[in-house]
Length: 430
Image 1 (cartoon, one colour):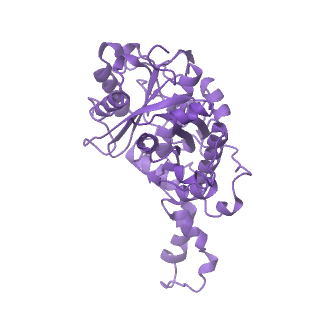
Image 2 (cartoon, rainbow, N blue to C red):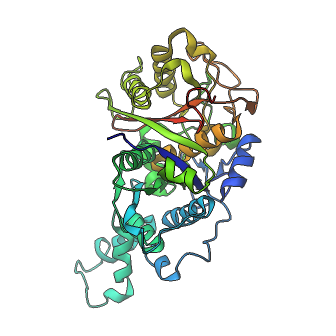
Image 3 (cartoon, one colour):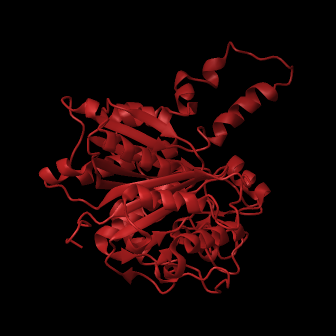
């Protein structure tokens, strides 16, 4: 039995560069930065007090109000982004086909807001007489609080809001989560387990625990005085990434069904590759080991060769080791052709959305194919001699793209690579 193909027919985005797809895409192509001083909490005493925050967010009136009491802000980002993706695709689950809809999400490391845990600390650990008074629990704890802390709460609220009745799961592989969620959605379509899949990711670690943890690891950029230039992927002066937050979702559907209903098709999600590195928790091997395997598997899975790839959306975090490792991986896979393929890191403007990064950058890659435009790598002013690929420094580049890769490499060694194709990339069509 021939496996089915997956079309991307809807995209929704909530991000530091805009709270809808059109605004985000316009700001990205204009080279704008979503990075500024942290406002979510007082970070003035932290070594890094900048981040790429979602700004001026308001929940869509189409989201059921009863769900909001169970949701923290970054789950609300997910609800809005998913709503936009459905509207963009022009299709929603109905009673007759709800069991043919699936949902797979890349979810974040932290499932609760910092203030929630602080409330427990003050109530119990800081109790002066050493006793725990449960009799007054309504004053500090409600049943809805439990719903907010569950790791699958975001997935559950998405299923409730959109009445999805088929396969559903959440993925957490750190920075590879969103990419691997999209890849799992592709597999469901291929195997016929679903005709339609809501796939994407959401996250926010812009809180005292998240920021302090990354500060202790030494992975955040210290360029507090110039936030908009702090993320410098592949630049010689790069010194760390900038935390971001947000959500991005796609509607995947059986390509033939999408064509039959006359759907707009951004791209075909045609291949995925995954690997697990065993080098360091926070670093990839300098040779690109791990990333190499993921890229090779994505190409093989899509049934195309290295010569067909016209763009790579890099993981490009702006850390010394990641950028070098990814550059070397691209060289290893593409050989002499590596220096002719446009590569860009959009984290230079959006920040690093952690579990949502792969979903956002997969969406960017689909938009690149659909629009024939490649966003730049911002802030690459001092080229690193060891990072010597074509990183699209000059601004938006116009280019017809047959196939493109989206890389996501996570803490802990999880590596994800997605391959997207132009919907007409069939023999004789493009």
